[in-house]
Amino acid sequence: MISYIVGFKTSEIVDETIFALISMFSLGQPTAVKHDYATYIANKIHEQFMNLDRQRVFKYTAYIYHLLLYYQSDSFPVFLKKLDAMGERKSVIFWTLVFYLVQESPYSYYDFIDLFIYPATCLLSTTPPARLSYDMQKILQLSKNYKIGDWYFFQHHTVIRIYGCELCCYRLPRYVPMRLFALEYFRQFINSDLTYFHSTKKKAQLKFKDQLGPFVMNKKEGWQDIDHILSEKLKLKRSFWWVPYDPFGFINARKIKYRLSAYDHCKIPEIEQFSNQDDWVEGTLVEQFIKEEKMEQTMKNLEKTLDLDSFGQVSLKLP
Amino acid sequence: MPIYYLPSVNVFPDLIHQCCANYDPSQRAVMSPSGNVLFYITPQSINEMLQFKPTQPLVPLSMKQLLDQASKLSSAEISRIAKMFMSPECYSRYTLPYHHAWFDEP
Image (cartoon, rainbow over all chains, first blue to last red; front, side, top):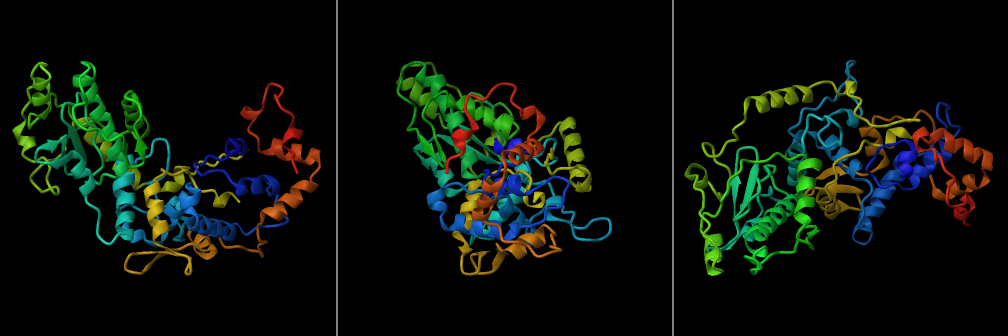
């Protein structure tokens, strides 16, 4: 709120620097004293890193992103506009929009994950992380006899399908972070359970993890909140609707056990044959885009190469 | 000051925790697993990425100094500063349900 009153739009938690601004900065007038904010910020980041377990909230995420991008720019497969018209190096905030929260950005949340988070994670890890981690694969398929869903690697996105889910799956990024996996898992699993078992007062179909990654699911209606986050906030696109989905008959067997009507899987062999692969292989699953989607993609790719100076993407609203 | 207010970004705490795990406090740097410096977290590295080149000596910033200065401001000066920075749409049309003095604790 203080940040808003002062007129700056930032996701960082407001701290002392805001008060510094209020106290010291006179708009349009040069201040008599110029403070060393860089030292202040560097020291604060150091303090936060030394006490992150205790503090739990990190206030300088934007600084870490920009430092990574600036000093490891070759590692990110993003178009970067480093120089201005005079050939001078620009501030890093004008290089790309890939990680900014900007209206009408050509970069989607998929791009943020696949073009920034994934390469950054590779820089910080001994081995590149898998598209779907071993833990996630085990959650979906603990053993031959205990499976709750499948995963599909498309060329540019990933889909998980929980057996019995009646909803459209979301297209997750190529690289699936646990926080996205957890949201999609909760959403689909709860829907499957509510649709076929909970409403008929039968026991839940399979064991449900109520805590996954950073999330705790404590009420069944939570799947609607998740749906809102994935569609409205992160603006993920949906995959095609594939119902009934139960390739190994787990839901069907359970329903029959409870003397409910049978559940017949809708077969799509040309896609099913590529379920649960270790990685995407050429000649397997590729996204099918309609004409409008292709046009939109072309436009966004063009926008990404435009000079960012003209975007005014730095949302600083001075009073 | 505004140069140090970076635009809003998508928050992804996992990456911050990874950077923290790879942070070498003695070098003030985030390292790769193989021991290379990925980036320093120093005033110089921050100023360089923001292309800020100070043209005059900078004064260390401390909360104590700011609090000392703030305590010396008159109420008229505080009002002037508040008006300067407060967006018109944020002005209250109603009498606030609390008195400002309640927050002026020592």
